[in-house]
Image (tube, rainbow, N blue to C red):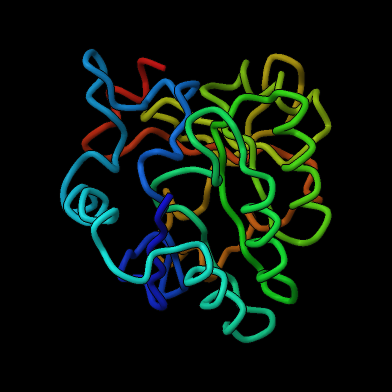
Length: 223
């Protein structure tokens, strides 16, 4: 597993906060957007992200210890996003709890957040619950509102989900009556992760929805 840390993102959606990416081997087979012989992949498989992601295993200073050292050096209270691409540490569907714990420890006093498509096995949920308990927010990623309802019922972690690309409402309810708040950065140009921070709030009682967008939106909508 390799990691790339960028101190100041140039992505308008995240804003100028620290961001990371993890190598492809962390992506779970459980993710329906994982690139295979029959699936073209997620937004990370499009340029310019693809260029950086493919080069990650060959880059220097991309070990877990390099990553945690850079996270630890961030000022207290710093908001940062883990995994623009990639998933939690661990090959494919499993979570490497020791590696995740190291990231959690480095994040103490900071405001790190991320998303995961790792399957909700007992071991994985234990690792995710521990991360959230100690201040590193891990959101469970739902493929749609029905899947989000299931993930919410686990009471293990905050939940996000994919919405249809033509979603125009800011708030809606799932089939089970859970509130879904559409990500403000998807419809307001003056909002970014840096100014929003909703995904970092592990104690929120609502789901955050992301309308499918970009070059991969048709693939995401198929999910």
